[in-house]
Amino acid sequence: MNKQALWVGFGDIGERTASQLQALGYELTGARRSRVEKFDGVTRVQADAASQSDWGTLLAERPDLIIFSLTPTSYSAAGYEQGYVQPVRAFRAALSHSPDYRPQLVFISSTSVYGNVGGELISEADAPAPGNFSGSTMLEAEQMIASADCPFLILRCSGIYGPGRERMIDAIRTYSVKLTQGWTNRIHVTDLSRALVHLVSAKEQGVYILSDNEPVRQSDFVRWLAERMRCDLSRFESSTEIGARGSKRLSNQRLLDTGFRFEYPNFRLGYTELLKPTPTD
Image (cartoon, rainbow, N blue to C red; front, side, top):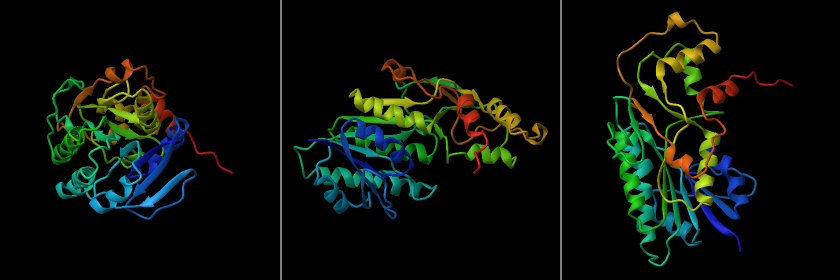
C-alpha cells in the first residue's frame, strides 16, 4: 500500500515536488485555502490551515508525511501570525486527539530567523536571533513544529528564485534597488524542491539551511545581473543601510554532508538560465 503525503499550502513548490514524491511511493493530497485547481496525479482539497476542524478532516486519513508550505496573509505581524502560527497551532490541537498518531513533519521556513547583520558565517549550530516580526513569527511556528513529538524537518530557506520568482530581475529593470555591501544568499526553487525530497528520502531529521554554495555581496550580485540585462550601472544608487534580511553568509555544509548536490550551486548559473530569451512560436 502506498504511503500518504499531505501538502498544506499546495502551490508552486508543491507542484514542482509532486512527481518526485510520487516516485518515492507517496500518494499526494494538496490542500490550500484558496480555489482548488486540478493538478495531475494529486488529490486537491480546499481547507483552511488555521481551522482546527479542517485539520481534523485532513488528519482523519492519517497521512504518513505532512509538508507545511505556508504563506502570510499580509506582510505584517498579524499577517504572519495568521499565515504561520495559527495554522501550526490548529494542527497541534487536532493532532492532540490522536495520541498514537505521529506523522513525519516538514516545515518550510526561512533564514529570516537569523537576524545577523555583520556578515557572520551562519550554520544550524548558531542560535536564531530574529531581527524583525517575520523572523520572530517564523521561529515561533518552528518551535511549535519541533515540540509536536513527531519526527520533523525544518528547512530554513534563503531567498528563493527561479521561474515565476523574478523579483530581483524586475527591481533591476526598473532601477528600484540600491547597492549595499550586505551579504545575500539564495536558492533556486528547483534545488529547494530536490533538497526536500532528498532529505525525506534519506529520513533525515532536524534543522537544515537550504541555500546555494555561494553567498555574495548584494552590490556584486546586482552589478553582475544588471550588466547582463544591459542596464546603465550609473543609475543605481548606493546605500549604507542593511535591508530587512540582514547581512550574513549561510553555510549549507550540513545539507552537503548528506550527499545532496546542487543543480544550481551559484546564482550565476540560475540567473543565466532565467535571462535566456523565451522561445516564440
